[in-house]
Length: 336
Image 1 (cartoon, helix red, strand yellow):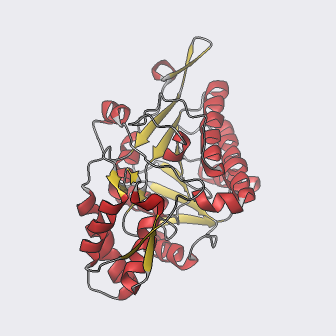
Image 2 (cartoon, rainbow, N blue to C red):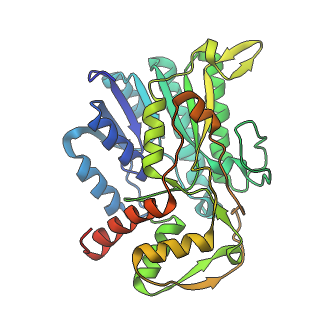
Image 3 (cartoon, rainbow, N blue to C red):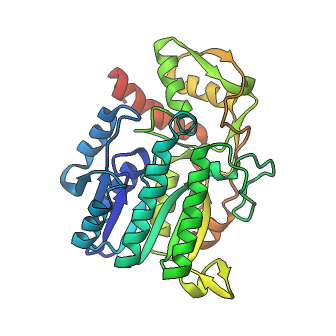
């Protein structure tokens, strides 16, 4: 991409946003970022990510719900591309704190769509989630599957985002691509994720809870594969004549992709690999399923491969090795 092109990255202090911004800077983009650095998990981790980005990005601290702030960023920087990764994350947190999800994920995304409507970037790429598949039992999950049985409010807000984006693409011609991420892991990850809390407990000698008595599997996806997918898709906006959705006989410039490794791993097997990489053994407690959880996720990434020629393929052992090296160095002072 041209070095003159500007991209607006929301959630830039978050796990995925940080890694995407690092790659974009390396590739020569002018990066503008927004994040509220809230305390959903340790803000120090977010600040450490921002410190690594340093002056390579133009950073704004604030909320997506602040329509005036979002509009001012678009007006000042006129980004040609938007990578919307900010959201209130977490399935279980949504059960106890639903208001946060409506504010950030619905109102906040509406502000992004409105700004795109008026400023007309070349491409809006936004984060959805594998959680939209909810209680579906047909695997692997494809973007053609029905997604009307969400198991959590978080999942419902992510599906709502897809419908909102489709509507704006249809009404205003905004080229938009939604990405359904599958259990992303890696260095600088989110402490609320199971693999991260497992690592914390293993390193401190505390027991870990393995839900549904270990009868669960996840399509674990390396952050490196997530970033590669995003940077390949950014310069490939869906044109109206190439849109994958049709409304009243006219192709709509909106599409959806699964971003997953395509190889679900049983949770007990995952723990064994993590133990090996950390050099410690976990004390396991097999417990019941939690509300909002699903038994299995499994991504069909055919669409991504057909368009970009790329398919996420980082072996879990390799990806967890990178995570474990970072985790020991960051939290325990071990040499990577």
